[in-house]
Length: 303
Image 1 (cartoon, helix red, strand yellow):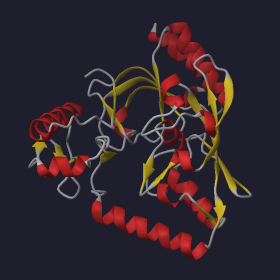
Image 2 (cartoon, one colour):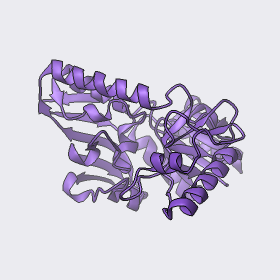
Image 3 (cartoon, one colour):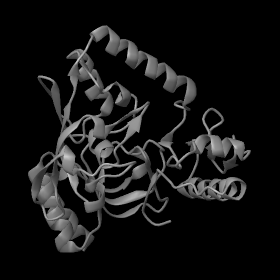
Image 4 (cartoon, rainbow, N blue to C red):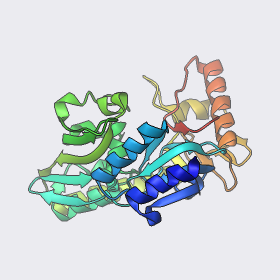
């Protein structure tokens, strides 16, 4: 059965775009994760629609993958289809004071394009290790900026393969959420609105934010970024630190000593290590402060 499905994907995409039992540790910033049954690398919206058709016909679950940040994949892997958009759907086009980008375009690449065009407003996102598609789904933000501040419209594909263009006002963007996330849409393309700025000021701001990230975040270790959402009225990292958990370890997973809001992979962490550590942290913070931390990291596969 699996061989027949694999052949369907190969006919649609070409053999070089279809990987079988692909280790997800190679495709996540955590460097953790067992094998995915099918790992597909489509080149166009038409190919994506074809993949969704096959998934629907065969009853296969699927997951849309950017560059694998903000993601913890089970040690057992994923019994379904991974659709990677990061490698191909990544074009970036500057159009006056706006930028159009494929869902797989890296935020760092868009920030560089904005800087080169003397456009300001995207500096906050330049150091976020992800794609614009994933950033829009969860309304990613940093240093006082969020995706909702600069979005003009988003082109999505529904689970049925229909393409829709959603204007920013209809995206229902909140803290780490959007209508795209709620409806399970697949982002194809994003258009953002920026403003003309001073190239030197833009460069200075980007350098300043890069210095802040380097000094405050454990960028030298694999991680998924901020592990927990920010509880209303609190900072997750401070609650974890004040609970005496700086440097707390489970196996190869550790609460970063540099920034307690990050869980890092010290070299050989498993997904179970990370999950257990997160559960321990959640329990201890709740016991000490009565605050329930919610994961910002997405779990994929069987835990």
